[in-house]
Image (cartoon, rainbow, N blue to C red; front, side):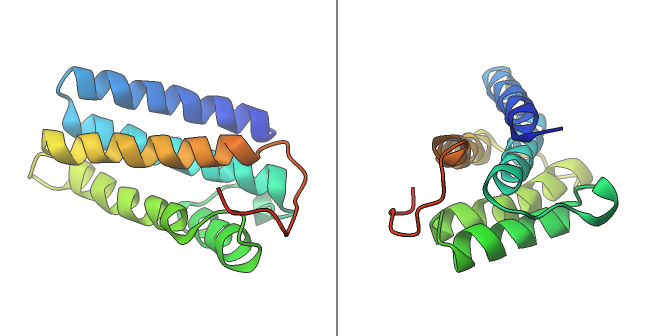
Length: 137
């Protein structure tokens, strides 16, 4: 799969999150928000770096770490707030998926906003050559 494939998966996950929010399925909304961000992070790593996971499997931990290491801290392609988004959303996803406590509407709405900002930032950089003098999105 290439970056475009993962970006399409991210779009689909984001649309699913919006549908879940509209239908008051808040736990599922947060879960889909996280996956939209995870898939967009993979697209960014494929398109903007030479990083590929050993064995071809994109783990959650390695994807988050490499996104932050390579694209936030080292090259400053994205601001720190964007780099924190996957960590925030995976925590919320774990709570939504594995805790008996149900996610509320406000958390789901914030999750959608975080995913939307992350996705927009990645989409604005995909396919563009790296320019170290450009400002982070």
